[in-house]
Image: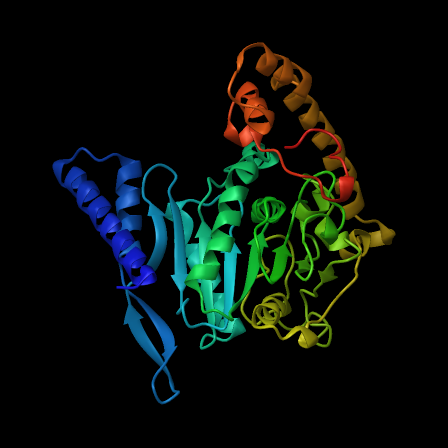
Amino acid sequence: MDELAERYRANHELLEAARDRLQAAADAGTADDAQRKRLATVQELLTPVSTTEVDADGNVVEVKRPRQFLKVDPEGQGRAVEVLGRLDQARNVAVLVPGMGNSLDTFRGQSDRGDLIRQEAGPSDTAVVVWLDYDSPHGVVEAASKDAALEGGPRLAEFLNELDELKAPNAEVTAVAHSYGTDVLGQALLDHGRAKRVVMTGSPGITKYVDEAADFVQPPTRLYVERAPGDYVAYTEWHGPDPATFPDAIRMATNDPIANDEAVSVHWHNEYYRPNSEALRNIGRVVRGDLSSITTTGTSRSAETKLALGASWGGPLNEVAGAASKVYDGVVALTKPSQASARTAVESGAGGRSGADDLGAAAGGEGAARVTGVPRGRRAQGPRR
């Protein structure tokens, strides 16, 4: 049995064991609400799905197959890495990184989003990996922190590089991330994760010092960005400069420039993956390498949020969020030790380790300790969140 098949089988058995354990608790009347909800989730993950494949005669046919998990963790918040399509045969592979508010119990929605990308890119030549192997933040306070990205980014980097051994030899990988997922992906790229192309939608920024693609995306990888009109998350620039403003990024249109927004329109923060929208079409074009067909835009926050009498709410929101971000940074600085105090603690009693590991121990954990090289000698501006 090849490695992919063995991993799919092992994770299927893990889900079966979780189902049996949760079902036993439900039958005994000892399961709480969270366990009953997780039981329904696990049962859904074990249900075969319909998918399209190409038969020996080249015809596209619908078949039912078990869901394919490279990894699954049914405990706690839950994690999953699912493959849609034939990873070992596809010419194009997309890795989808979800944003905040996700868990194993919401995973089906992300799987559906991954399938929309696959259908748009061309299902016969495309596989999509839905990667939720980090603890997605829940709520604004958690999303204001970069801890989940600092913890999950290195794991995503490792997975992106592991894909070389799992995919077809000449398949091209596109990493696609939404919202907080762009933070995770940005950290993965800073930690030497590899992808042919990178797509970011609705990003709150990567980190304070990153203000162009070259700061974290190494050639020949290119960065493609989407920011829809009214996307308040992107306007805040809560974690750093908006990638849609990077001079060396390709900013793709989210609405059809010919249809003049009369077709399927995309606005706000969560509509980038709407079927038949220009936003999803452009993502599909990037994944399949049809780069000459991409449509672009250069609209400003003010133009995208223009109100009566020439006023706009995009700019004021950016200013308010910037002030709030500074306050948050100040609070974090008061609750975490400085680099100087961490270094003093290390020098006074932590033998056997040095550098980033020492700083991590003093700062209170691996996630808080992640130290990343700053490209081209640039320095981070202020504490990371």
